[in-house]
Length: 260
Image (tube, rainbow, N blue to C red; front, side, top):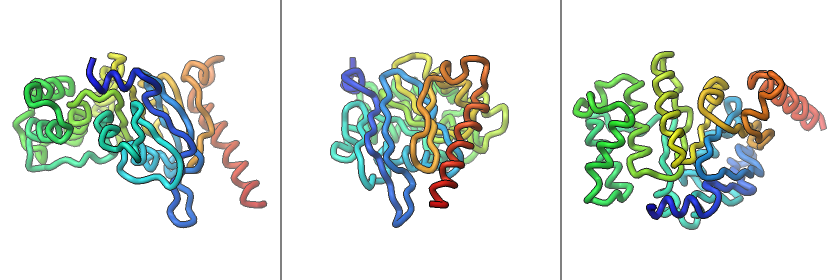
């Protein structure tokens, strides 16, 4: 068992309490709280502008919170940022790739940044490339690859250090239907091992239904629902029906608040 694995099994993989992010008078995230256990695959769902990406960026240490606590594998992302980031694999909506590099070179570069031990680094890179279906294009420049393959490179860099927590932010945005199916299949395969906790931020309901076990729904920067997918869809209701009902209720509440 690696140090990251041990940290992940000691308690919640992700723990958030009272998380807030304000930009002046605008509250992008307000009073957010949830806990995700090791090995869970959770859909972080909400309409555009709900605060999903802001939350993901706080969880990964890319932006500071205004208030609140966020822990990854037991490490506070704000006071113990180095160790917290070592436990996270992050695929942002637009992966920060270097177009002149090759997939093999880029993933190796990230492995060095993530302190993958030199002795096992080559094997770790090969394993990440293979899991993401990149062996055939490993020596091509990233600029020459399709968007679908660039997303695969983004996934490979996120998993190369075998983190206990994967944070995926809109991983299929902008892809064509075939590429979407391929990336979803890759994520399902990663999640199926049970070795990693996955939080998938998206506004696409089908994505959550295809991959996730549990749904956290946010609206206007706050949590409005947190249940397993099985609980939400029991009785034959669809996730779309649940989403529509909850969002309609939230909009009605927002109208009352605005009127007050």
